[in-house]
Image (cartoon, rainbow, N blue to C red):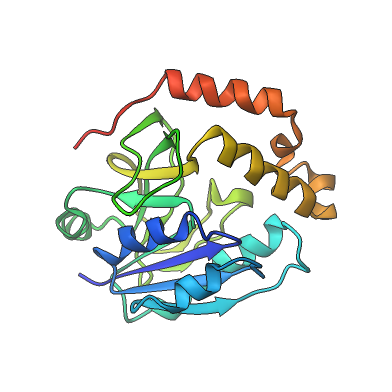
Length: 238
């Protein structure tokens, strides 16, 4: 079972080591698409034995359209090589206790596109050398981040990759047995600092289309949302 991860990143020196540790456990190849990072993201990625680093430009702005264009096409380098591809942002970790066995089973069932259950993971400190945050809040929806590159001709993601309109041989499922762990809330300080950089980098297109408009909310609102998330967290089922 050959799995490739295609990961978009911008200034992810905090999260990227966690992401690489996670995907290196079960992925044969990890592609990092660096969106003009100014921190140590590129250096960290280049020093990992399983990664290939590619760059793309959005005129140094947060532009959802640029990101979707990358996600809709980058995975095609894995056609005829990988059995499955994972297409995610750097803070999205696809998790299953035995992902190879799980994907073998889904392959036998002729499944070609999978939306894992979404979990917002919430912590109180920055990540360390060990593993990831153990608690989070589950949601009933999932993003279609996992698919067979040899059956899907076009994935056709929408903005934010929350939906897709795939073409090819498509058997698409939403499955709570497998999870996508969203590592956006390491701590409230991390959230506020990160959102401030998103606001400063927001493209005109995003603002006109109201994509990512929640980043413009007041810090007090982000604090309330974080506290609410933390209060509703539960341990990730093993």
